[in-house]
Amino acid sequence: MPIRSKTIDTTSPEEEAFRKASVLRAEKIALRLIARAEQCTGGLRRKLERRKCDSGSIDTVIEQLCELGLLDDNRFSRLWLESRLRLPRSPLRLLAGLCSRGIDRDDAEAAIREVLNEENEYSLLLRFVRKKRRKTDERELKFLLKSEGFSNGVIKRYFEE
Image 1 (cartoon, rainbow, N blue to C red):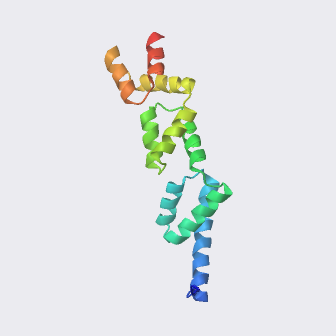
Image 2: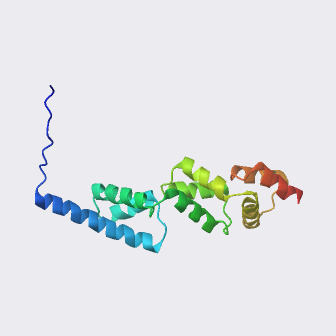
């Protein structure tokens, strides 16, 4: 019969109290940040690290906030994208913006596909062209739009209208 090894808790009451206090401090900061604006896990992690929270406390708080639905990268991505649709940005710039905020590239691409329906993308293209329009020929503009991540259908629609 195998001998069961007991895990002996070597944490002193003082160390445990310090750990709990550290988690509570990180939680308080995180909730204050979430109350002000939607957060993503990567961004919240960086903000907590800047405020000198230890990594164990950060991991605990982020896990708890995700379980409670207070922290959701997909929701953050959709809301962030929707707030940027009024600006002259390209899909490529939107993708880069999400990735720079710590959103996984696959998740960022999925959010862009979800938010950028054909009408939203076309409106975005119009604002982008208005901002970028120089004395370029049609071929150069098509290349620019394609390289900035606009879909072929939306580019074609722009040149047909």
